Length: 91
Image (cartoon, rainbow, N blue to C red; front, side):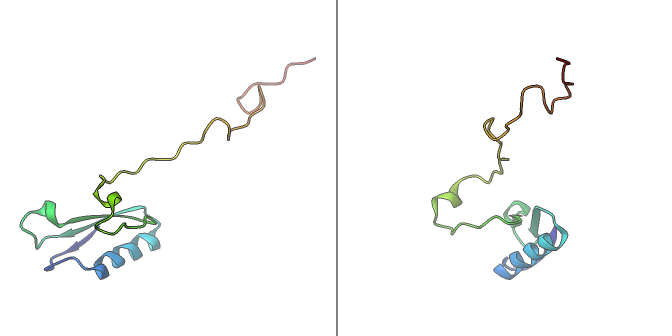
């Protein structure tokens, strides 16, 4: 979390937060500007490694959401009875 009280948030402020996230290994950071009429207008959310879309792109209008990727069943190739705690039965 980076706290500022400036007229406007610049790209330099966002890059500073990105640097902090990279150095600490954290994924999510907030930039708070207390020099806004309401605190809600002064909050910038930053995700480490996420490429920011241009303001006029359709993706920038979508709500921010991080969805974990799930592996499909085809990627988990396990042999029956193996890797699940079962012991091989004697033959």
